Amino acid sequence: MRKGPWKSTPNAVYEINYHFVWSTKYRRSVLVPPIDETLKKVLAQTADEHGYEMLGMEVMPDHVHIFLSAPPAVSPAIIVKILKGTSARRLFTAHPPLKRQLWGGHLWNPSYYVGTAGHVSTETIKRYIEEQKTHADFDSPSESSRRSGDRTGPS
Image (cartoon, rainbow, N blue to C red; front, top):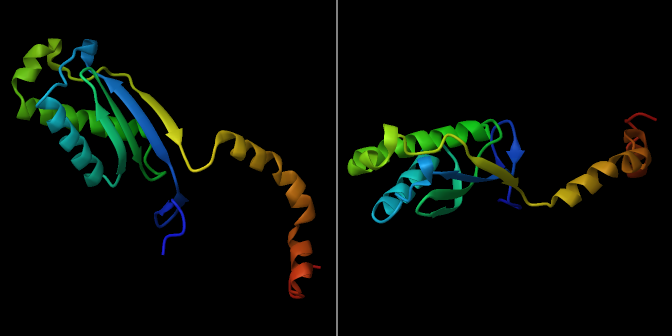
């Protein structure tokens, strides 16, 4: 039974959520109906195929917002490369006139934005890290063993 928002792999328990934003080449407003609906389907399918959990998505005429969760072994750069590359190929196949609207036949601007979000705030993490030394002094392994009545541990 799942007790929190965490996901797991054989080697990690994680909650990593990424917010990606990228724009079309030259900020051209080409992501309009019916292309925007095709793009949404392609991005959702690609995320699913690669084991990413799509948490949110919005397609604007000249840029895309994606909010997804992915395992820690996959870098954000790889995620965005897969999503942008696959979506461009599939959109050009599904909508051939789209390629003529963009000089050089490139759909996406090469840059992107990525931010992370998780269950706890930045301030909570900072406070937790800062307080580790204080808690470690009072809760050393030998101290916790004595308190729990375990006499087999270090004394």
